[in-house]
Length: 385
Image (tube, rainbow, N blue to C red):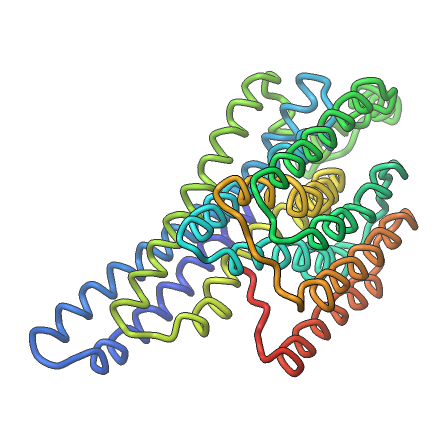
């Protein structure tokens, strides 16, 4: 219920701000009939933007629960499902391919670095700050996560990147998924704690007392208890629907953003660096912080590990299939080293077995330093698209 209230409050807040700001923007957009037409178009775009953002957040929350239900019902590792469903960022793929087809290969490459850096410097950082928790991730997964950015060194040294590079990178991500799948299916580690064991313990203690004098099973208090009651294939199907909602929400938000920029003549970089980026970042934050808070850290950490590995292999590979990319000198001298360092630090924190608040502040501080240096030295703001 608290999550629904949060979504409603977010929607109302965005709507209130839009209704206050829209008249002022409309007056600046033009006079007479032309101004009225622009104002009406702007209001429509704002509602489209808000609708897309609401769908994005709602779908992200639902996807978490359905993944847990599918993993429990099918006896499949939730970590594997998290990598497949949340690690592969379909909206970023579509955007990156479209940009490369338009000849904006540099911007498309920026998506790869922007996503990977923000996942550790913002998303994982906030998870550690807001919801410190113990994490139990196999060391080989952490090692793959740490060395994944190093793969880009070999490819950037042989730049420009072409279709063959894309095929190789995509193949590397497929091998990563196959390795995780085989390892998880052979693992004896249970996907979730045994609910029946907790029920038996609760019954031996007389159950958990409720305010009305009744008792409640411990399983009812386990993470995503309602979702875990669904049949496995039903949870998987609903997870696919939630994933579709994520993609539609991201696309709708993009349409609304474009309409707002056209209607009010706002500066694109400013809007993208503030409102649009904040909304898109909420998706990853929900997919990482929320499962950790609800007792399923495998989904949150799986999202970060899967997304970073996918960004530097599969995502870049698919983008390259749409056309070659010329790699700038500052990629090797600054952006790639920054990605390697931030990922290595994040991997070490995960390796310790417990995410602590100071871990989060360290990652966030490094990310902010990356922004400041990028702007001061290179004169560019590394905005995540």
